[in-house]
Every structure is written in structure tokens, then in C-alpha cells.
Length: 399
Image (cartoon, rainbow, N blue to C red; front, top):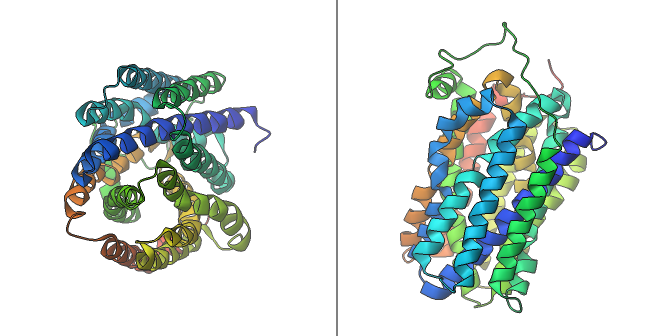
């Protein structure tokens, strides 16, 4: 698969795009927490970051009917221009939280839609039996470019001006554009026998399809519940790091779960869980990640928290590797953009509300209680998945 120049360009473009996103994001959120020392402003920042996801369904038809290559280039250029604007404001020492949150919202409008386009392009490029392997490679690049670099950025902020770090983000987006320019255009070959949605020109048609498919509906509802708490996870990790008053510690803590996820996607998903069918692997990883979250709750006041964060991340890595191919196997190629964008609207659309809610609740609910509740939610979702025979028995090896 990696021998395919087309897939390699997509993978490298994704790596640089996630690297650019990670760099500007960590600079903004650390600037906000150092300037305001307020959990509410952290919540407002994540609200700004996730808000564009609410409107994902409006772009579903565009994804299905437009060249995926051209869309990826357009979105990356938009992110490049947005981070360039951020660099301009930082060069003027304008660190007002409202300005930073606004700039995060602008860049996120481009960043948030790249995943649906990349997944749609992958579905057209990779054979069904190789979707899980492709997802594993993509998740690895996501973790390396999106989060593992955080520790380095956190350390760099101790010695290098933030303007230079943000300019590196601009550079990363520029390299991503160059990789996506080299992609081939892939067209959907429509199959008349393939189940389709009621009205292809209706922006709500993706939701219609989801409500007709019980498994997709279950995945969307539980995904929204989980992401509501994931938006709170970002708030609590920032506050835990701020208690140590070090950008380097912030980078390390933010890197812990992704580092575990990277190991999990390589060792657990590819080796230890290799012979377990996709659906069973997905359910088991959800359950074990929930147990890991419960375990984290005992170590929130000490730097030892890094160890359980890494351990929990092992199973999150497996679940992320399995999530995308499950969707790609359930959704028709010609309607993937509409349906997946509708799912993103709900699952990502709740995250702005979660960020604001936990930005306020962080003063009342301590981190130990948060991790306990979050872990219990994951375990309950895993049980619901186990009860769904279609998901439990899902395998990419079956026709």
C-alpha cells in the first residue's frame, strides 16, 4: 500500500496538515491559559475550535460531487492563510483571548472538513479488505503530526518566540498543499444496485439515510456522547498542566494519550489483535479504554498521570484504527460525503457545547470525578456495541 505514490502523497499531506494544526493550536491554548488563568476561556477556545463541525452536513454534497483532490488543496490553502493571519497578530503582540479564539475559529473552518474529504478519497483509493490497514497508517500520521509533536513544541516555547513556531505551522500547511497537488483525481463509479438516499440534492439527505440505518444511528448517537466528554478532556488536561506552570509539561501531558495511541495502532491493532475481526476489535478496545480512564482518575494530582494516560491511549489507538473502516464499509461510496458529513455534524457539533460546559464545570467537578464519569460512559457504550450483533460480527473479509 505504501508503494502507491498516490496513497503516500495522501498520507504525507495528512501528516503535514496535522502537524500545522497541532502547532498553532498548542500556541493559542497555552497563550490563553497563561494570559487569563481561566477555565472558562479555555472552554471558549475549544468552543471556537469545534464550532465549524456543526455545519459539516452543508458540505456533504460538495464532497460527493467535487474533485476530492481540489477540495483538499482548497482546504489546506485556507488553513495556510488563516495561520498566516495568526502569525501577523502575534507579531504585533496581540494576545487578547477573543482575537485568538476568533483566529482559531477561522482556521478550524478549513481544518475540520479535511477529514471527511480524506476519508472519502481513501475509500475510492483503497480496496475494502485494506481499509483497516489504511486507517492504521493514517492514524499513525495523525498522532505523529497532530499530537506527538506537542512535547517538542512545549519545550520550544520555553526558548523560541511563538511567532517562529506559528510560522512553522504556516510552512507545514504549505508542504501539505504540495503533496495534495500531486494526488490523482478519483471519480466515483456509481452502482445502480447500491442502496442510496431519498433525495441526493437535499442537504438533510445524509440524516435521512442515517435514521434508516440502525447501526449508523447507534454509532452517531454514542459518538456524540463520547465527543461531548472528549471536549472536556481537553479542558482538564490544560488545567492539570497549568498546575505545574510549564509549557513543556503541557506538551508532555498532551502527548501521553497520543503516544500510547501510536503504540496501540502499531502493536495492539496490527499484532496482538491481528486475528480479531474488525467489529469485535472495536468493541473490546472501547471497553478497555473505559477501564483506562477510570484508572487515570487516581493520579490527576501528580505527574505520574502520564503513565496511565499512555496506557489508556493504547486502546484508544486501536478504536481509532477501527472506526474509520467501519464507516467506510457501511456507507455507499457515492454518498459517503453527505452521510459522513452529517455524522460529523452531530458527533463534532456537540463538542462546542461540551467545551463551554466543562469550562464552567471545571471549577465544580474535579479532574478525578471527570475521568471516573468519562470511563463509565465508555464502558456503557462498549456494552451497547456488544449488544449489536451486526457491529459485533462485522468483518472486512466478508463480502
